[in-house]
Amino acid sequence: MDNIILTGMPSCGKSTLGRMLAKDLGYDFIDTDDVIIQRNGCPLKDILDNEGLDGFIRREEEAVCSVNVTHAVIATGGSVVYSPKAMEHLKSLGRVVYLCLDFKEIERRLGDLHERGVAIAPGKTLRDLFDERTPLYNQYADLAISIQNGNTTRQSVNAIKRHL
View (cartoon, rainbow, N blue to C red):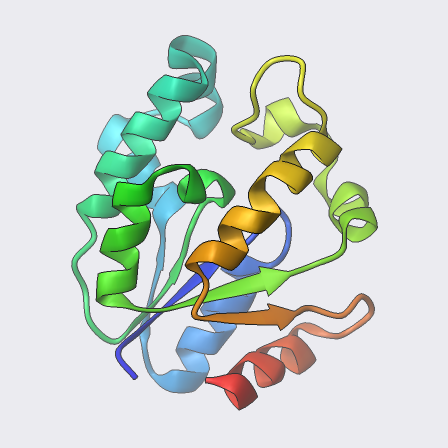
């Protein structure tokens, strides 16, 4: 097992679970949202506001394709699945694990989509986003793991480790 790449909807736990999983495995942890912020010198929200969804996807693709590591857990932004190039790069780095969380729980966790910097087209709802992205997460996943509502972070990390 080399790298583990976590994908899924915003607020499904990619960063939180990824940090703990990396610590457990003795791996480095990389959050591709942080890579985007570092490369562009501004918050995700600013990129979305100034360049729109297409500009954000382009910048995300550039940032993700710049990641070249070994022995790391990589937490991706939820919109990474819009870029076949970024997903092919990630798949070349390791196993892609889709963290599945039901819609109601994502809706409860997320709050303000704009303030969170969620890449969503104007006029689309969170439900639209969920329905649009779910097939893409499944398409690229080497492994899909259901994150159960009510599980602790430790229980969710242990579930991931059992399936690796």
